Amino acid sequence: MPGPPWWSGKFRECGCRVTIPRQAILDILTGTSEHLSAEDIYMAVHKEYPAIGLTTIYRTLDLLVRMGMVFRFDFGDGRNRYELIEEGKKEHHHHLVCTGCGRIIDYTDFIEDEVRLFKQVEEVLSKKHNFEITSHQVQFLGQCSKCQ
Amino acid sequence: MPGPPWWSGKFRECGCRVTIPRQAILDILTGTSEHLSAEDIYMAVHKEYPAIGLTTIYRTLDLLVRMGMVFRFDFGDGRNRYELIEEGKKEHHHHLVCTGCGRIIDYTDFIEDEVRLFKQVEEVLSKKHNFEITSHQVQFLGQCSKCQ
DNA sequence: ACAGAAATGGAAACCGTTATCATTAAGGAG
DNA sequence: CTCCTTAATGATAACGGTTTCCATTTCTGT
Image (cartoon, rainbow over all chains, first blue to last red; front, side, top):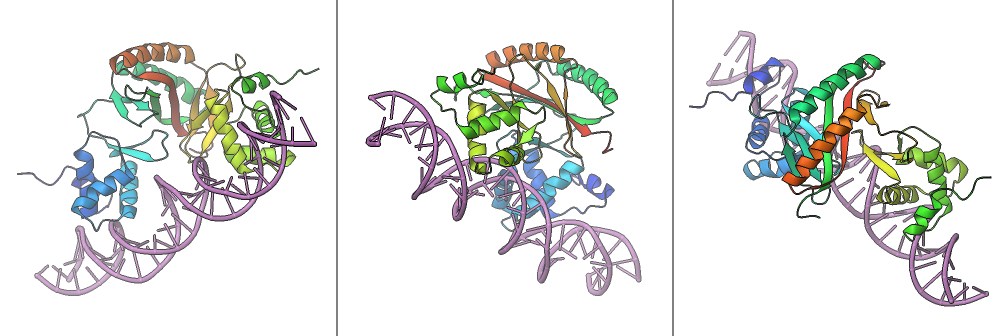
């Protein structure tokens, strides 16, 4: 007996409506651990709701990013990728990006050390340059086992 | 009495010719500490050599990146930016990117700690995932003093 | 000077994303 | 439940950075 999806409240809070396209997109994002592009999401959504257009995908993803429900990543392959922020479910992680095939591996090794260091760096930098730091990006680039 | 520019050898090594456009581009990159886009470089080069086309800028930058003479950065504003790798001249640094105006601040604070940690992480990750890591990317995003 | 290869420049193509605008549908009021 | 307001949508066209294509030019070794 699934109640109303957990995100309904979030939408209401900011005066946004809970629509079919938005739910469809969130369903796709909920059901994957991959880092999907707008096109990926469009195709996945399209299977069930062929009427939903690509424009809506972009618009919705933008909204979700602004609402803080989704991360937007740029792995340097010319398209943005999106990942649902599931509270508490998945620990903070960084990425290993294969420049050959685009494969992305999440890693959490040393993540605590990294985060601790970045906290320090953030603090120093934001004071020194009067900069309000909102996020950081860390990724390792290289060739995965198949692409070497 | 400037000898042949230091890069002549590099070009020869990989069977590439030392041409006017290539020198013009390297001159621009040598003379700036900014993070220029292809368009920026095109305009700067254009002042002195109006005949040099945008295509050549892109091609040459690609070549320089492949030759390891230039870094290519993506600060998420939809265009790549380029920075000459001047051996020993400038220490390794990371970036602070203003998402408001696009201003980029180089920083080196804690850079040794960062590099040390990344060495560790790289080692563990490359073994664990049989991944050949070639570089890392670190940047902090936020709002600079003017944009807050 | 000559031939073969590398490099170039302009135009068109590409591709992810955004803007435009007429149409549809969510959801509160009655 | 129905109506009404307004947010949301979808098709199409536009946009902007980058790449491709191809004919022409420029190097470089002979």
